[in-house]
Image (cartoon, rainbow, N blue to C red; front, side, top):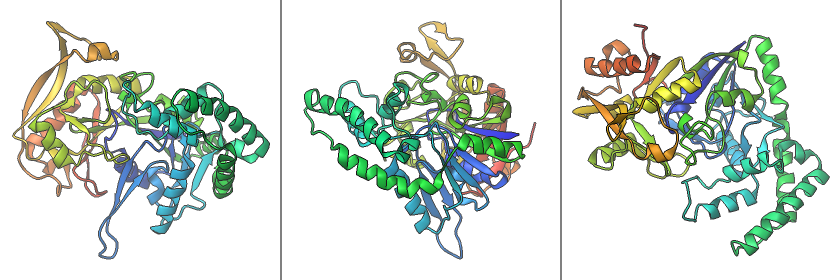
Length: 431
């Protein structure tokens, strides 16, 4: 059995889409294990016959879809938005990417319903908003764990679908009308909409856990793709400013139905600096010219929402924590080229609260909001790196920066990305 998990090791937006696309060349299956259409994995394909490079932003379909030999799986841990899925399938087909026979969707995946989106948006209007994408992800997971959710398999039986929808809408409409003073939703319209959706996705639906386990028994190589980042994990992240699922490596087993004994490796994707979208503590955030430069040079705007990302220096305290809870054995550093023009580059190597140095990363926001980062400063290399194709050809100061990160994290540096294209990925020799 061979499963490699790709985990975002920070607050998401680390460049997982590109890395999964790069690694997909040597695997048979790419499987997405959690989250929903709140994810935005950007993949840029190389030019064909003199045409310009093509950019795709995937929200639900795994990033391995651009390799013809790869079969893609949407696992049971994903919450599925029918509108987003059909739109994504349509865009890929229009671009000449074959989907039929290459996409499987778990019959146990939960569906995002119109009332989930409505409730999500209303909650984000209040004073206690946490900065979600408003895509209905949280409310859908709430229904899942309160055992009132609607799964893909429920679309097969109209009576079951109608009964569940009517029960859920009775509660939701009362909430919309009496608490939020909003219009009620029409159950018959939703039923008709989702019955139509069922006809369109029926060819893709199967027991994906059974499929994956049979594939592993035959020696197939599987790449498990997570969304968001480890520090947004609902159990291990900066709660309550987190996502509603488990982006950490453990989520791959529950979200795909594969055993822990099948996992061979966990790769952490790390941006060469730090970013965060939405609210919540961010110790190394730079609310100054440095932060603006990182945002501008790095194009730091959300692939799903377009929101500007908060930017700051690399944080090795949170990264060490992330490596530990995920069992990360290799890291891939992305967007190194964004730092090419900086005279000085800082890395957070510790936290202080008053005169006390913290021995670990605090996941309670009350403490995390008080910490002061302890920085180590590196000299910038002030040379372009985006055209370099071998690690040994990187400026010596860039190599020193990367090797210091590797040494301080005590995790092997495996790949370095110096641009968005596939060919801008460097393999790192072992030390």
